[in-house]
Image (cartoon, rainbow, N blue to C red; front, side, top):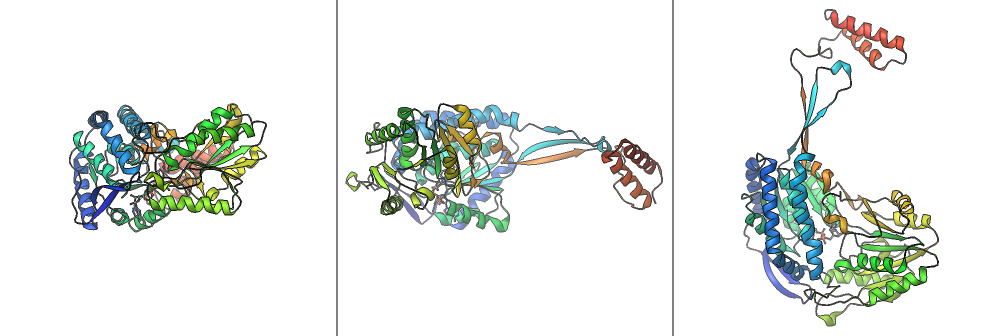
Length: 521
Ligand code: NAD
């Protein structure tokens, strides 16, 4: 459900710059109201069992299946994603998550027992239970406006939490749609609440009484969110930007590799955190052929209106994004980079279009190799060795994903183990965000914490240790009163457990047992 507000923000279709709807900018008070509603819903939602929640997720899956065309079409209109990608990259992940979580969350989060190995604790029995945290704030970006927040919400509600979602101001209609779909699936009021608005609404959310914040967005946004959450010590999971490297080894098949690199660099017009933003080709006999194939597959990409099923490159999201891309390409050119194809904005197409662009002659003094571009730009560096490629790939403030291109999977694994990132793909890229079984997250300025997989679920619960013992259990020799007898008992216990020789251990045991039998000092 969505709450109402007086101020509004307009959502623009980036393919034609037409307004497609006005959204309320929620005030701090309204955000607090939403969090209070969510906290109220948490009181009963946390008491539901896994089977009930699993059923709700499966009902939600049916709603997505039923309304898939409408959801995909709205995504394409609001952020300009080619329609094929709105199905492929936005619906798949949430649909799979419903099934994965319904089938696995209870197994993953079932109680565990602890084996105490210290014999002095033999009467104690530990169990670990995993309990919901409370209200989770999900703050989302616009580039995967449906799949990113929806997958986060599904994990949160399946673990018994409730959610307040703040979608990006550039994709608020989709955010509101997400709330509507959860409502239609029969989730009780307040389990999923949507607050629309800009950074000020997000900021208000981070200052509320949340149990956790899952933030996906820019490094700058992540730093702000963490700072804002710090006074209340609200834990944050940060999924931030990337500058992902593709390392191409000399034996990589040119045609296949070129197709993969072109897709990885240009899908979603390069506006993916895991887009291939730096290509390191280790020079070899195939290099010229590979470059020719990259040029070929880039030239034939169809750029145009994103709702056309044949469109492969849509617009970027807005003018500010376009200007950032232009600035990086122009800087690279002024510093000696060569434009192999593309390189220009295409205002003639009516929206925020930029041609898919391949650059060579780039290096690490250029922004296009060091800062996130988030546009359809593929900068390529030719390097002499695998070691050089790895060193350059690791020479980055980011550490989200990387890819290695070679038929030699043993060699690829050796490279993968040297890369400082959260995910490494062989001969592919990006896709695993949509696989709920795989952990997702990065290192360095790409953030911390993990979403998806059992690690993502563990991040959403209180890991509670319950330590059982009866009054008749082992002697609490560590309790008061202290004194020489107690000191000897304790020293004996330590010698018995950790003494270097058998003799020390036996004498320790004698001291320990003797101490236990003696009256306290
Ligand atoms: P952004 O940081 O501008 O905004 C993200 C969200 O944060 C929006 O909802 C925005 O309104 C909100 N926000 C902004 N300032 C805030 C503040 N001070 N307090 C609270 N909320 C605030 O990012 P964006 O432009 O929407 O998204 C693009 C970025 O997201 C890119 O850097 C991309 O790499 C990254 N991203 C990362 C992942 C990942 O999984 N690591 C996935 C998708 C996108």
